[in-house]
Length: 195
Image (cartoon, rainbow, N blue to C red):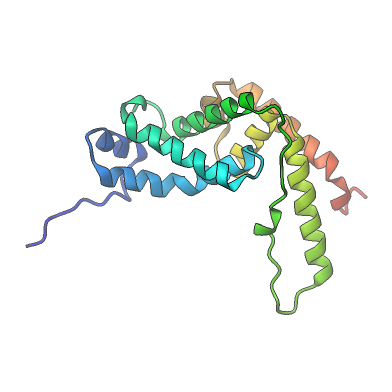
């Protein structure tokens, strides 16, 4: 006789957090599965492409959730809340660091060269664009990079970003516009229409 085990993949994040606060380990496993990789990517972009640091931050964030699942207000969106925690962790790290420009490009993970019939010139141009994009992204002020990253890499809405950063939506739109405009200007050499 098999015991019925509920399926967690169809539950909302908020319900999983309620189950987790009641000691349900499988609920935590599902939350981790949903968010660990996305948060690692977020931390990578925000913390100078340092993979070890990003992994440590993901670990620390989930330890905080395990130790105090009741810290989450289930009247809020979990996605917004977890990015708010991640955002605050980055801000605290910036305060600890005197030098903020300790980056490496690491862009090759996004642009791989296949070995069959590849136009090498196009690959070189794409790699160069990726390196320049990454460099200019890291040169943006933290608040502009944060908003751009949350919107374009993590897929958060303007409203979700505003809630996560505790900044009004108008300011988020302004920061996003500024970041996009700044990146477009610095990368205009790659736009054949502008040349």
